[in-house]
Length: 301
Image (tube, rainbow, N blue to C red; front, side, top):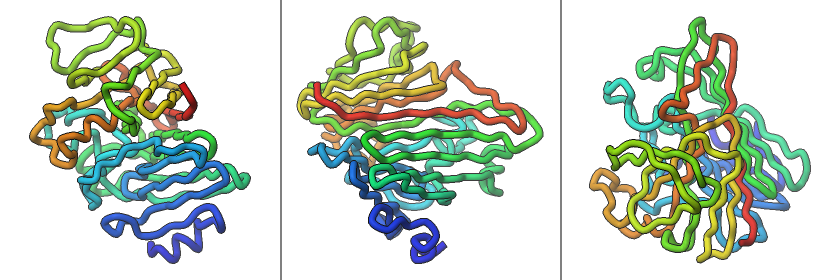
């Protein structure tokens, strides 16, 4: 659908406009009384969220990101679905699934007030997706831009058979410096470190960073907090219907296969990913649905 038609169908005067963004991809630009945001229809990926009272964006996006069909944008909030991580069947399918690599469509837009803007996106199975994953489904992503940023990812099983998924809301948080960041709320959770074959460990106290971190934390609390001392702010993460959280920062020794990050970008972001990953798999029966949600709020330390 052309940009002009998208604006006629879904634009909101004074709040929401659709225009060409990087790579000529269709972007949604939101500016209401409380905050501004940018969302790419490629991946239904939120690339920017900034309350007007804040000096810094909530989200990090790499300057080296690709903006093209079939490739994920590095940063913002990619959606990992219907699997998290590498292809579980080793069939050379895309890492983190396929919905972050294609165009979503806008289902609806709404301004309930001059301070609240809601956008609903939809992604359904296609001939191409059936090649990757032979299941009938419909995804909806509900995004609310206001004093806080809220996401609700809803999976509908529209087929005749149950299917099982893993998934994550893969958020790249913009930070002042990785050495001045503390993650609170993981105390006493068990975690598996991707680079440690010795098994599970238990987190004690706050999590800080002085090297690469790539962990799956299990049985997490509903609330997590990022203390960003360099930006003098606290980010509150509230998630629902997930038992696992992934924490990732590549550290100074950037893997050679990651070419869409600068060598020093690790200093400027941390990924805290609310999801259902590892053993926290979700089975969805025919004509049923499952919802994974996350909310982000910026405050002072």
